[in-house]
Image (cartoon, rainbow over all chains, first blue to last red):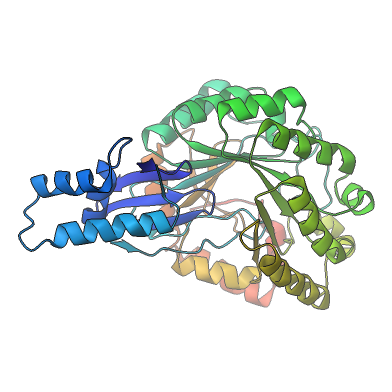
Length: 83
Length: 331
């Protein structure tokens, strides 16, 4: 998957911003969301992103996995992701 | 994980700035750059008082232009627009477009549509501009040509069609006046027929050329009521097919809102000066003398300057203060 054509990501101290330039909507991201976006790359699916995050951060209660999958789902719904 | 998924609010002339907590950001998210004040047309309502021979004497040189662009790209400003005047008359227009697009910036061109030859449209498509916004202030030759002095309705339409043939996304911008306000419904329909994906409008501002022509332009509140009712209906009619976006608030309400929620948007003038917002006279930076980071810091401080809030409140007593927007006040 990758960010949709008109979606731009920028890192910020508070996490990051996603800017969908066709609708001109801006989404402010917390550090966890920004970490998810950093992992998005062509040829990488949701499962691989979660695996990468879990290898990097302690996720004893599965919160990172739940949040990451929910966030990726939300991004798809908003048209911010494409395959 | 996300917050502040905001609906952008359109500026009075229809260019939508980006809302987010600008105080938290390391750089602007949107830079709207009036790259020249020169224009082939002399529109009755032009807020920039552009026209033939109206280029500023001190517009940025080629070297300065690309130095600014380099800073914007280095700072990862994700979204830029080039406007004017007419941006396509700038001598380095295509090189500037290429510079931004090749570095991953998303770029919108705001044009009067009179330089959209087939060759230019194909070039814009190949360079990968995000969109070209064409001003179409009327759904008929009569109203368009009256508003856009020296302009030609049919030529603008042909340019839009060539953009679509080349595969360039198109937006339409519409400035209402007392003599074209009744055509808004037909204009939205026309935009859709032409293949636009977005349609913008809002109240025409009393500034620039409009100060001299207001008796011809100023629409009544009754006309605006019908105008906005039509736009509400068209929004529903085209939902999912074309985005109809308009800003219904008056300028005073808009500015009061911006005072609390500054958009992460810099307005760059042809001479490198940077304004807080188009609808205020305040200048918060100068790319000839300052870096982007200095200007961005000044921008954020500028919105707290008491002169800004005072000016906005004075507008409540005298809405015609906007006539002086080109008498810049340096913060």
